[in-house]
Image (tube, rainbow, N blue to C red; front, side, top):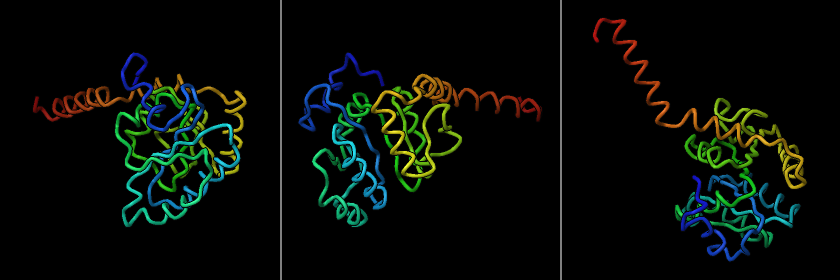
Length: 198
């Protein structure tokens, strides 16, 4: 996830026609979650000095119709990317000020681990995370309600948000697939020895 010397590090600026170094938040949106889409619009209208890049699934599908309708009119600093290419997504993640999760259901664990491994500020509603993965004030900022999340964005924009990025990175490193695989192998060996099958 360290893209500094890679060819894709700055693709986000080209793809979204942004000035290099433009300040933006990355928002990962469930393409069926109309309530979350409305909240993103509110955030974008409050924080006009930032762009909000929304990465979501296929809004042209039948299931995306509701969210597409919400986004029919949106603030000019809200950029919507439906089914974005992988290189664009990773570049957007890499160059972002932080990631915001507003969904009514949690994201897949892999996506969250990528955010943590990228050393990004993570601001999330409680409904959008798995509690054992994102722990409030330990490796991310978890908010009970939207009003509190807005205050969190305000703190981050002013440089007053508690910086948990290193904690998040350590958590992702300790729980990466390879490390979990090694732990599983140890458990299997232990079980087999206990059953005299090893």
